[in-house]
Image 1: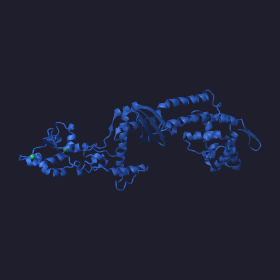
Image 2 (image 1 turned 90 degrees about the horizontal axis):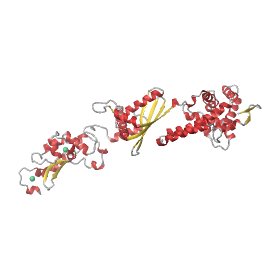
Image 3 (image 1 turned 180 degrees about the vertical axis):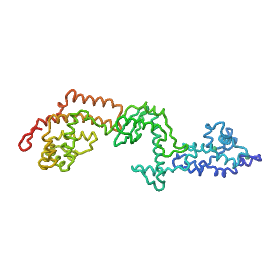
Length: 479
Ligand SMILES: [Zn+2]
Ligand SMILES: [Zn+2]
C-alpha cells in the first residue's frame, strides 16, 4: 500500500486513499437539485448518474498522476485556453498537490458551470444543465400526448400534470419536436411533393419527401385557416405554410428570453422551394370539371344535381329509394348491387359523388323511368308527381347520350384522381399516369371510340336508347 511506504508529509495521494470514498459520495455526476428526468437516458448512462465524477489517474509509467473529472476529461477538446484553470486541471487529471486535493477545491469544481455542462454532454443530454430545470417529466409528456391523441383538446387541463396553460405549452413542445425531425429530414431531402386538401375554409398540407439514399418521409406539414377562397389565396396560404415550416419555434405560446425565439431560415425556405417537384390540390370548391361547358352543366343540373331533377328526388326519399331499388332488381336480377344502388343522395360538392350519381342514372335508366312513373301515379297532384312528370315529358335522348359520355370521362378522371390522391403516390410513375389519362380521353372522344367499346357508359346508353318500352298507359315512349 502506498500509505505504508509514502515518506511525504503532505501527500495528495495519501489524502485520496484515506478520504476518497467520502469525497466521491459528495460529488455525484448528476446533481440532485437539477431535478432532471433521467428516464430518457441510455441504459449505459443511467448506471453512471449516481456515480462520482472524481477519479484518480496513473501515467504511462504507472506513476500516480493525480485526481480529475471524467466528465471534464471527455469534454477536454472543447475547453478553450480561456476556460478556468480549475476546469483544465481536473480535465487533465493533474490535481495532485495536497493543497489541491481537498474537499473545498473539489466542491468548487463541482459548482462550476463549465463542469455542469460537461456532465450534461457526458451523459448525452442535448442541452445546458439548467435548460431542463423544472421541465415536465417524460410521463407527463406522455399523458399529454395520449390526451391529445384522442382528438379533443384537453382544455380543462390534465389531472396530475397541469392546467390548460401548461398543457398548451407542452402540446407545442411535442409538436415542435416532431417538426424539428421533419425539418432535419427535409434538409437532406432531394425531392418533395405536397398534397393540399382544402375544405370549409381550412387547408391541410401533407408533404412527402425522398433523400438520395431513398429514405422516405410523409408528414403533416401545416394547417392554414381563414385564408379566403380561390386559387390565389390558396397559393399564398401555401407559401405562408412553408415559411412557417422554415421557422424554428413557430407557434410557440408566449416565448420569453432565450426560450421559444422564432428563427426564420431563408436558406432553408429556398431549399424547400428547390426540392419541390409537385403540388396536388384537392379543393372541394374547385371541382367544377363539368361546369366548363354549358350544355354539360345544363344536362347535369336537369337530371342529376338540380332540386327538380329526378335523381335528386329519388335520392331524397327513402320510399322512392326503395321503389328504385326494387325496379333495379327486377330489371337486372343477376346484379348483386343491393344497397349500393340506393345511395343516390350524397355530398354534392365531392366530384366522385357526382360521378357516382351520374353513373347510376346512365346505367339504371330503365329503373329511373319506372320509378318516375310510379311516383307520378302514386303521388298524383303533389309536387313529387310534377317532378316525375317533368322528367318523363322532358327526357331528351341527346342529353342522355351526353351524360353517358360524361360518365366515361368521369370514370377516367376518377381513376386518375384516385391515383394522385393516394398517400403513397409514386411520383416516378406519375408522368405515365398523366399520359395514360390524356391518351384514354383522346381515344374515347377525339377519336370517337366511346360508343364502339363494349363496356363504356356510352355504348350502354346507345343500347338502351334502341329499346322501346311501353309506358304511360298505352302510349309508347322510347327511352
Ligand atoms: Zn502519499
Ligand atoms: Zn468536471
